[in-house]
Amino acid sequence: MQAIRRTVGRRARALLGAWALGLLGTLPVQAADGTLLIVGGALEADNAEVHRALIDALLPTGPLVIVPAASGQPARSAEGFAEDLQAHGLAADRIRVFPLAVRDDSETPDVDESEWSRNAWDPERVAEVANAAGYWFTGGDQMRITQVMLGPDGEESPLLQQVRSRLAAGAVVGGSSAGAAVMSRDMIAGGVSFTALLEPLASAYSDSEDQDSGRLFLSRGFGFLPDGLVDQHFDRKARLGRLVRAMAATSQARGFGVDEDTALLVHLGEDRARVLGRGSVTLLNASAARFAFGGRALVTGLRLGMIAPGVTFRLSDFSVVDGAGAATVGKEYFGYDPVDGGGMAFANPRLDQALGFDLLDNDAQSLDRYSIDSQGRVLVYRFSETADSRGYWRSEGSGERYTVTGVRFDILSLRTELPPH
View 1 (cartoon, rainbow, N blue to C red):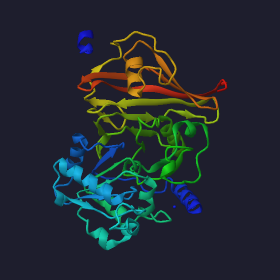
View 2: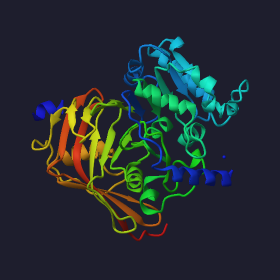
View 3: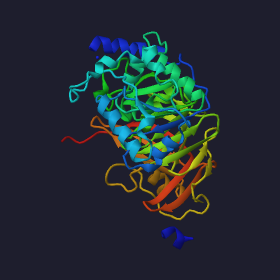
View 4: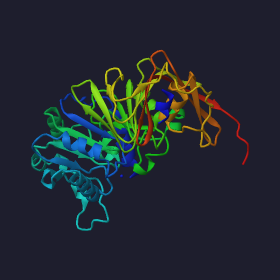
């Protein structure tokens, strides 16, 4: 076994934020029989698996409609994605760009994309894509998407109503980065994990340049995904804590963190989802968790899983269906004592590596990872093996990949005194 294993203005923005917060929990949750392709951002042009999944999920007739509303370069981003799709076999005559945007791109002097801002409310323009086989929302700022597709009182534009109707009829709806964020009923619009866990939520949204700094800001999504909260760029931007805090604030019991260049493929109406691409999807179950932000034990009793690409799992209980590889729990390969801590001097920096090598494929029963800021504030992510924990290992061309489920996840807050510079 061992041998085998070796081988907008400030006031306007504040009003927008208050409007968005007031809409939390008011829009309908999607009930449909179509398909969702939720991509964590940074989708590479050569990621054939994800592009083909979108193409294969299209209805037999009708166009794929690209909606570039989130982008600061709307026309160019739509054109680029259309070229990628053609490279992966989708005919050009099956691709339509729906002109919808918030801001103009100065690099396209022949068109003023800011004039597209009301197109989602134009019945004639929307009727032009009434037979859509699918929709794709590009990356950028997710608040731009909701700004142009929802009215000031939360009413839905004709375009959004059409997307819902076509999804219910079996079409595919996909999106990357910002296009992924709008998939859930509640939407994460900005903030970072450390601040989200230790400071109050933001009450107003500024702009996309602040998505990766400051406090957590929540808004309204579209609820295409019936259950759960989505976060994206999950691995590179360390958004685990951010997703946890957002789940607590929205009372969402399930969270889906999608890595970059990675997709979560969901066939609505089925109890299964599949991970595609090059990273992992992190699953959080807060049904038995307790939250006490402001104290020492911020979060206790979460359950966490990480699903590798190629693995299918059940949405109802996050259990693995197939593709994960060989079981590790009870047949652990390693027997070392992992060092608790954090930072660039520690091995297995990725979460899937830490939970695989250091915990569920090791004799260790718990693992702590620390983060500290310049004020001496410390966060401890504590991962513990439970009777419900399961681990799986497989080898592939890019190396070893772990899938884990049922890991207990707690978050603690500490303080320390830092030496002067």
